Amino acid sequence: MKKAILALEDGRTFDCHCFTGSGEAGGEAVFNTSMTGYQEVLTDPSYRGQVVTMTYPLIGNYGVNLEDVESDRIQVAAFVVREYQHFHSNHRSTGSLSDYLKTQGVIGIDGLDTRALTLHLRNSGAMRVFISTEDIDPLSCVEKARQVPSMAGQDLASVVSTRLPYRWMNNEILPIDRTEYLDPAMALTSKIWKHRGGLRSVVALDFGIKTNILRCLEQCRCEVIVVPAATTADTIRAMAPDGIFLSNGPGDPEPVDYAVQTVRSLLGFRPIFGICLGIQILGLAMGGKTYKLKFGHRGANQPVKNLKTGRIEITSQNHGFAVDIATLSTDDVEITHVNLNDKTLEGFRHRTLPVFAVQYHPEASPGPQDAQYLFNEFTQLIDG
Image (cartoon, rainbow, N blue to C red; front, side, top):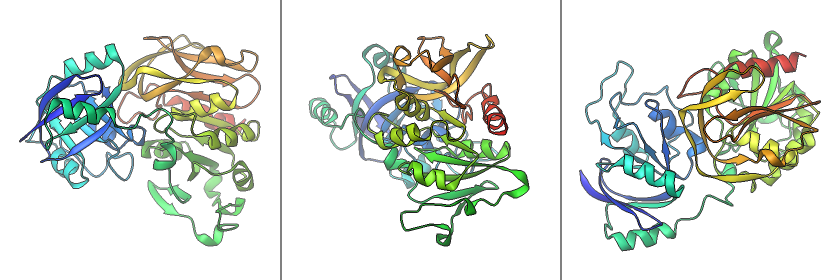
């Protein structure tokens, strides 16, 4: 393995090795506390532009396969582990993690103290990072880390969103025939719905949607059409769906102002369910404000309290921004879930409109399934 260096913008550096050959990468350094599910992490669009450190020490032992992907490509800027396992073994495996990263030009490094790196990020906050096998001079690499663009202020949802609407059916992406468009701007009519077997029609606004979200919606007897993040409220009204879903996605919600305006215009039109970036966009649409967390929530073991039932749910999360509870109007909004680690907002619903959202991932992948009931709550809201 080739010698490499990881340099943070605050001057901290870590010597390491590259298990994917050679290369350079920059992004925002974050950590994930999941013990398994690294392939889902790699392909989750919410990680776009981030250098992800896995806190679990041994990674790569079960290889990769063609099924455990959450999008059509690896989304992370680089992958950091304590010890890479070269000899994978699993009956579902179709290849090694190293080869998987190599084929998509993503650098993977190991041989550094990921505990020290994680503690540093917890204490100092998520920050810009630069990794290189070519330039291993600490001072030079620190300077390059400081030149990496900040995640704050970037509209990353438009980068990962689909360019064309598509139908999700039987675990497949099916392009929508161009004859079903009203015009080249891709305004759609209610004719696009197949209305198979009384399924509920749902428009999913794609800010970086994960594949397992679509599976969960389909399992709840929803006919789903996924549309680009910039789709207008008029277009969605013309589609006349039974419900609207706001997906997860990467980065700062405030630059996604076009989606905020769209969602604000759709309040009261149809039932709305938002997750992750979706709750942040919904919060902004309802007059709230968002802020950047110190080091974010990323992992499959985040404890969340359901204020309605009193139950504690262990949840899968991946976000660096949050809605400020204090900025939401208590006349309009009821807080439904809070994070037990830092008391941040994890869920709310509108008091009079059929609108609710959570900050975490009820579809998991990876993670526990404590929160999958929320998809049923969405369909019940549609039916009601």
